[in-house]
Length: 105
Image 1 (cartoon, one colour):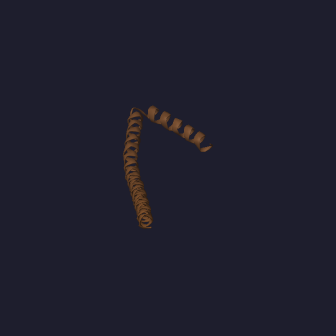
Image 2 (image 1 turned 180 degrees about the vertical axis):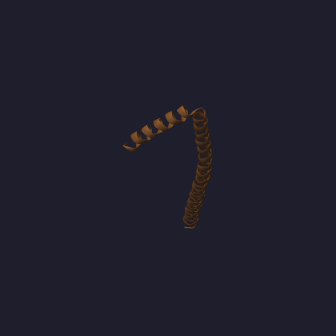
Image 3 (image 1 turned 45 degrees about the vertical axis):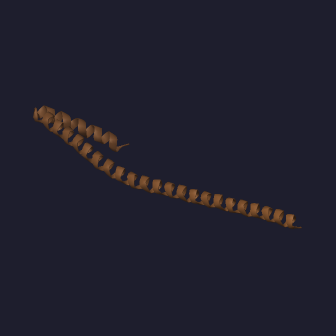
């Protein structure tokens, strides 16, 4: 009978050890999932901030670039029209005609 009790005690101890091991593995898995979730959340937050900053910088650069293009274009027109009254009249005639075509679109 003593041997049966010792054997049963050993079996129960093994079951307890196995249960503790499973509990520890599940705890580690839960921690890992939590860490992964935090990492993904942080990455998404960083991307959101980066996107906002990138868009702001894009808008500023686009505004500068287009302002420069428009200024250069306007100065070219002014220089062209300064050449003579014929240049100015021809430019205005073409501008009016093309504007009318675009307006009908």
